[in-house]
Image (tube, rainbow over all chains, first blue to last red; front, side, top):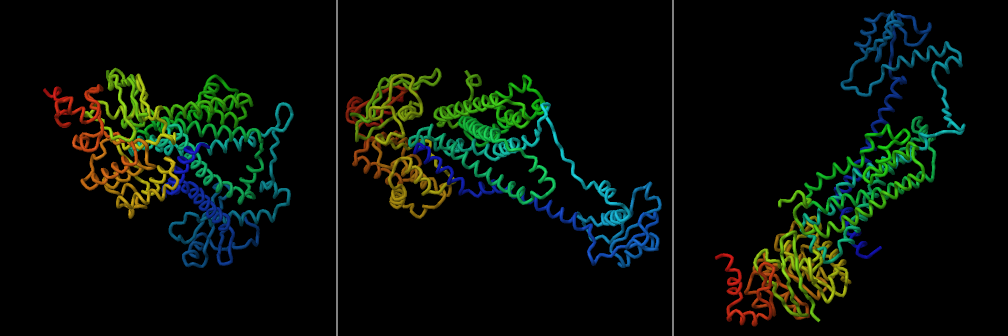
Length: 395
Length: 239
């Protein structure tokens, strides 16, 4: 690497890594993911454990409908009022009333002393467990299996050629890479803009351009921002992968993981597309940043830039089918190409040749954008106002 | 050979001509005054010299070539009129960054020596934004003179400086001059020009109105002071 590019990149990386704001932004999303995971874990624990009766919980049931077998536990002879009185007098913790018209109403009344705001209280489900246990005792193994649905359906999809089809399994990794790309844009877009605007806002452009060429300055900054973006993405992806790894025995996660079909070619192409798209996006933001002079001007451009990138999502359904003209245009238009290519790769509606052409279009566009950013920064670095197109200028 | 050569240099922005067929030289080791009222083209000339703008016609050369900031054989220090620094960075990191870019062997050592000299050693790890305007100017000056440049361009160097800092700046300029650095000074203070400069160029509307040794210019204008010459040249506009 050129020594000037290296020096600029090193300075930009170190100064960002020293900023608390960088780490706050980097760790916020993993912390949120962790927080959501923790809450869902706790609530799952609550839902799973509460319906099971512990030794200290006392229960009473009035079964006017005769649903339970004779001699079933917790059944009392008293009526509903008697049961409620037991709860009031704290003789029992939980009281269930199964009315005579249970089959029609399909309702069981549940009485217990409220302990304030009980978001996760699921004690009412205890009756379901008790009723199920009672029914199971009266049912043979096959009936029980059928009734409980305790069997797995193995989905064997086939192609028209008679081969095994696993479109969803193949799409998981490309879509995951696509989601990571969105995260990358959301996390890094503003920084890409600001890294160039900062030079003008601080009135430092002239001082710096007598020490380093605009080409090496811009390329160094872009490399630094990409490296920082990768750090942030890793901080985001690694906790997700850890959570998946820890919970691979979980039914839902396990079934998704087992479905994943690793297609090395598709993964390599997806990563290649990710890389060139990130550079293209960095070049675009840097170019825009070189045209404006303040953070406020810059921030108004980030929105349209993202909208252009995510435009193909509005046509999501079209991407699932045989590509029409709109899909073809979006595939090869540099601003929409990254997302369009990711979608088509995920849905399996793109050939290898088309995909490579798309990647090439994005790569060439990235180089053009960086060249534009360099020349624009050289020209506009010392214009401390916003650059207006010629047609907007007063004659 | 001259350190700066301008040959039939013209500069237009759209339809507006800023510099019209200008030729001049700056000799090695001399202090050269680039003079004129606001908007006469002084800063534009420097910006073309440093490659920020491409000239409309002619050429401006530093050491016989177009200026390239990364050519270690031609070191140029430029203190622009529009001055700034990375406000959120601390003093030593900022100075070391520029020192590394300018190819100093030991930028930290150089920076510490300079800060000691200008009385800012205690601000070493302070953020730039926490420094006063005068203190920031000292940092900018330090960055400008890093690596003993062959050519030093100072655009309104004493603008906003208090008398103490002004004296310090003059001392540093004198030292560099003694070491053989050629200095281009853009200033409105004619007393500074008379005291420091060997030669000068007075611009008006992008045209040279006076050029040569200070004594020659004075002689050409009937022995008047530079201050009076300036008033005479620009006086027409106010009549």
